[in-house]
Image (cartoon, rainbow, N blue to C red; front, top):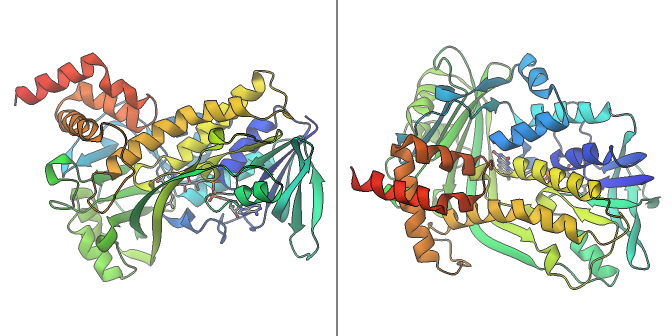
Amino acid sequence: MQRAVVLGGSFAGLLAARVLSDFAEEVVIVEPDQLDDEATGPGAPHRHQLHALLAMGHAQLERWFPGITGELTAGGAQLGSGRAVRFYVDGRPRPPLDDVEMLGATRPFIERTVRRRTRELPHVRFLAGRGQGLLVRGDRVCGVRYAPAGHEHETTLAADLVVDAMGRSSRLSSWLGQEGWPVPPVERMRIDLGYATAAFHRGSELPGTVIAHSTPGPESGYQPACCEPGALAAVENSRWTVVLAGYAGQRPTRDPREFIARMRRCVAPLREVAEHCELQGDVGTFHFRESRRRLFRATSRFPGGLVAVGDAMASVNPVYGQGLTLATLQAHALAMYLRSGAAPHAPAWDYFCRADVFIDAGWKLSTTADLAQPHVTGPYPRGYPLIRWVGDKITQASVRDPEINRVYMDVLHMRRHPRTLTRAHVLLRTARVLLDR
Ligand SMILES: Cc1cc2nc3c(=O)[nH]c(=O)nc-3n(C[C@H](O)[C@H](O)[C@H](O)COP(=O)(O)OP(=O)(O)OC[C@H]3O[C@@H](n4cnc5c(N)ncnc54)[C@H](O)[C@@H]3O)c2cc1C
């Protein structure tokens, strides 16, 4: 390829650019926000919420940017495994796992580091501007229309491959429609989730803790009965980042007193931080109305020279921490697709198939869990009552049994496919663990 253009220079766009730098003579990232130092910007306001990078996402990040973990930890990020990474269900701790390593760092810090590494790639360049549409010739996309920052007039950029990395609000579907192409259908699940994140000074109150994460589970009917859902991460600049989550009427607010009162109803590590640490700055909230995915493969026709990555393809309930990891796995799918010798000018059906393997896994995991909330009204998969019943039993057994917990956490960290949980040995062991109690 002579030139690949990536629209959107956030996490998924940067990963896609890294992959494309192996295949194109020039990669241009078009991004309207000034993202040099703080990785802030109106294009992705959710950046300031706590972001956990799952073990698979971390491994993929290190694969594409070797040595990045060392750079992040040198800059103050924390790395932990075993008892440093604590997951709770219904207030009960899961057995610790020595080979699940997690990084404690803020999303802006991770993204800034990834952006710096991307900038260092020899033929990647950043262009300040906003994508406005596609250039289409015959049955393929051959470039983009964009408005350079500070200019009113639109200009064009030719490309062999265009990547939509414009996030949840990507306008790709309407651009396709304007050019006379079918619009990919969208699958949605309304979840009405509220998020609130705050930073606290980090001292020696919880030595050796990097991540603590707590969710309600089957014993409480997935309601915050025994403790509030929330998480904390030890991050750079000697801080804790703490997030609280709640659905529908239980959405957290920006009120710091309410935030701390809710932390006191969480699992022990969050209570400790509420008790001993000073709140720094404001509480930031985010309302996540629905999970949604664009079903590119369900369209009858699709132009060549065009793919989508990251939230532009699928954006799922953030409580399960899958978004960044899905972006790294889509980058992997893009690399496999291009490595297979596919012509960039052809419709990228094979890329979408490969990416859908990961998206399906993430989507099933998060939407099946979300359907346990009474205010979530579907759509239900076929056989949902049985899926839910079996899922509840495996979750209950996984909190007690290290072996089932290992499989469960590998699925949660996207290191194994969710169907692993329905293998005969997992189901038999689940039955044995629950009957032995
Ligand atoms: C509250 C919340 C908490 C989350 N927590 C986690 C977590 O713990 N772990 C995790 O893995 N994931 C989490 N996620 C998901 C994660 O944030 C997303 O999956 C991730 O941001 C997707 O990256 P992206 O690059 O696809 O999109 P975004 O980060 O949304 O970036 C889109 C980019 O496109 C740019 N853009 C928009 N329009 C145009 C245009 N016309 N032309 C050019 N550029 C454009 C924007 O400026 C922006 O920079 C969370 C999400 C939310 C909402």
